[in-house]
Image (tube, rainbow, N blue to C red):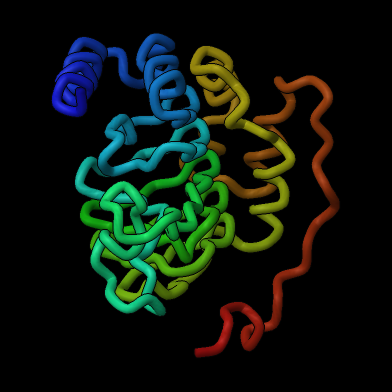
Length: 226
């Protein structure tokens, strides 16, 4: 049954390859069989061997096909880390010992090639970037860039005021056509978002109010210490 399901998975992904960004059929299939939720316009996570059941992935994400998200570690306090000691199906222990923690990946996240998100990371915040080869062992704040093994914060993509106004737009909730129309009215928003370009962008979005300016943190507070 496992081999059959794997073949069906591959067939579904291949049949929808040209429509992966928007295929409702592909998203419904992975939700039905693996409880993996994938938002519209996201690419790369349609693989149950790399993305565990129960994962929640937002819209407009880019997830490298060589990256992997994990939901459990081998237990290190047991006599052995062998599967016999955490899976009851082998008849050695009476109950499964794994504690599953499916990850949440918010909207607009980029996970680079060969990155590994370990069970220590429960959530990757909106707009974050995970560098190629990174080993992520804790939660990643929104709009953070993390690299290395273990992954460490390099910097934030934008200053606090820009992050605040970007968040206020909730641009990720727009469909492709709505996003394209808004960007045509404010092209700088897509390429170099700052308060001025965000103000132009939201003119075409009803009901959006931008927050007052946010002061930049002191240099010493900009990044956490070692």
